[in-house]
Length: 263
Length: 326
Image (cartoon, rainbow over all chains, first blue to last red; front, side, top):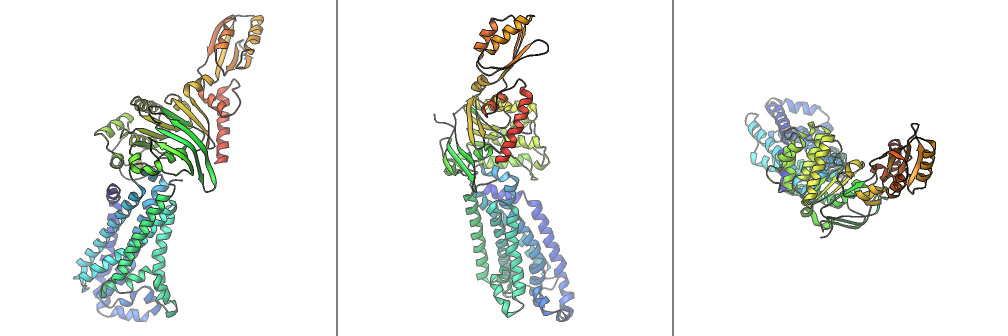
């Protein structure tokens, strides 16, 4: 298992690095704008002029302070998009791509069980995810002072852990999708379903009381609904997402163990 | 000593489509068995069952005395496997890939990978996705051979290899056999098996239609006979009469240059007796064409004196047949 894990982390360093650069760029793009956009009240004026539905869809109703700004722009929007793309792609590839290309058959013919294989690959995905979230955290920590965000870095650290759980959940769904039939596209679909549906349910659910029930099915809302970067992470939701991640990953191992590979 | 592989009534269905209909065969230790059949006959499915990559619907499998379904990695470390379709697209180098597999299935003797790479002339420090098809196949062979497994299971091992390296591969197989280890290999080309295999099992549409030693096949094989006689119509008529009475001699005809030609598909002793009584000036009895022998066992008719064209024609027919069934 450790051999599979190590290879999964080491052989993909190029991709990990590229995503890290993208996330740092996103942080560097958004955060320094905070003083000029929000600090002098211009932003609030602009937001007041926008339809409230749009503001809620973009989760821009928290922009008034540094924590809300960081949460809405970096973690909630561009970072969410980038990290979701990365982790869903990794999850879908972990079994799906390898089986499509035929290399999974060869790996499994060697001295490794299918459960070890899935466990090794899943841990590799989580390790890379933690690395990227850590990079984001560091970028935020560095920009905190210069951008006048007044963030409590302890709160942000807790939020980052929950945030990693949110990403891990869609990645685990993608892993399971890829393991079901050995097709990468199934993984992408399942991972994207969790991620996109979560985002859309959150956006729609916040528009009106009659659609509010949708929020219950939105992992995005489970995490962001508590405004974790201001108020601290909702530990129940955080643990829930991590448990969900582990369950989905274990399910992927069970599914792969039970079926024929490579046809 | 028990068999390296023992397969008994192996059935395999995908959804409701049964592709293996009760295969049985044995691979004795220290021997080489070739599995021959057209594409779609079930060769790859059979080999994958042995490695627990796919699971039989029913039947008994024993590989090195163990049940592959329940013996896990410990058993697979004792086997070297080459999949039929080897697609290597990653950015890692060949050396990294081989070290990865060595870490999973090792131990591999120090320097063994380099030794095999040199033998097969494959560059180890290039990214595998940049390698030619032949070089990828060589990496596949190295990962199968490198840990000196007790059993090798090789699916179409020489596809993509040039003739010189095919010879090297045959030498590697011979060394394994001389060590007392066993090899199961598949091919749709008999010619590469007739040099390496002790026995061949012929697979068609999910069943083994024949299982014979290469020597037996050779004995059953159709040979082409050409006889030149002393001049004279009388000698020719006499020879035609006598030869056509010999069992196993078919398609007797006179060539434009006056030679007699026939195909021989039985023992040659009666033929020699008949020839001895004739005023023969020259005899050519060709090396048996095992390809033709297999096609005979597949149930098509005997050679018609033009094995080359006949073989090509029948092979195509068989492939069409197999495609329809798969």
